[in-house]
Image 1 (cartoon, one colour):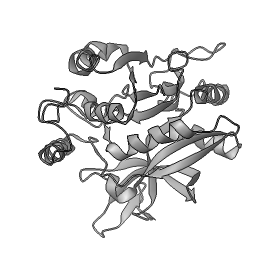
Image 2 (cartoon, helix red, strand yellow):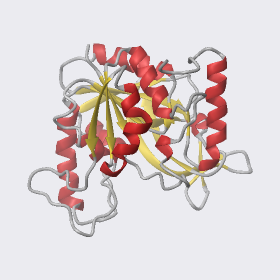
Image 3 (cartoon, one colour):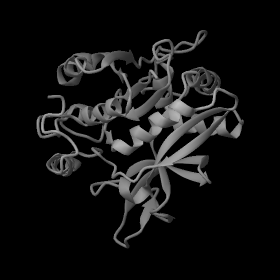
Image 4 (tube, helix red, strand yellow):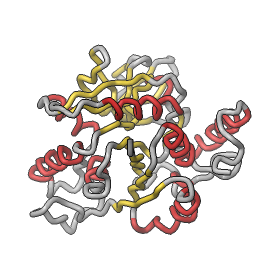
Length: 301
């Protein structure tokens, strides 16, 4: 089965000072986090990777990863541009902020025509998530409502020691996702509990299932996303701060009965680079995985 890995890499990385965080060397041989995700996806069965980036970092991407991995897997690029909009809409001149990662996946229309998994560029998910989601893609029924899947992680395993994070906190009924709430400023405080929001009066269950934005979808999902993005623009095209978020669009589709979403629990440890201070910790974890033989010293040989 042909399957594509879609990598969300157009983010500005505003909380990571000193460079483009997606391109920070972290592995023993200078690998970046995307190297490991692509390596794991290829081993699971994926045969193509599509990077969603900004045009101004294409040269850096080619230098850091694109030119190297195209010897091992098919590579394509999609540019998330502000004017990549449905017919009949134009981007207001005042708009500077990207439209959100839901829009990023929408920009893949016409490029990704096969089942796919979409991931963040700066998150390490582990091998299990890719293996299980590839299996899901192979067995997804070709009926309505459309079936998609996500890998779920425990909230306590997705926090940063150096600041707050945003997570999609999920409600799961059996193995089905029933709702997802984008929750902001999540961090563990001195009382040992996990809090969210500026006022800190919301305490979260640290064992909650959270989405780390890794979704498995049939090719037709992008057409459904197109419809919801168009509806978003009808209300928000002149709102310069509004974002079309992928989890929110998926929740809308669940509510309308357009899709169902299976949740695959991953026991692998998630980690990522949200803040510059996370970098040495991530480097140490990749070294440990390499020392244990999970990965070769030189990932691509």
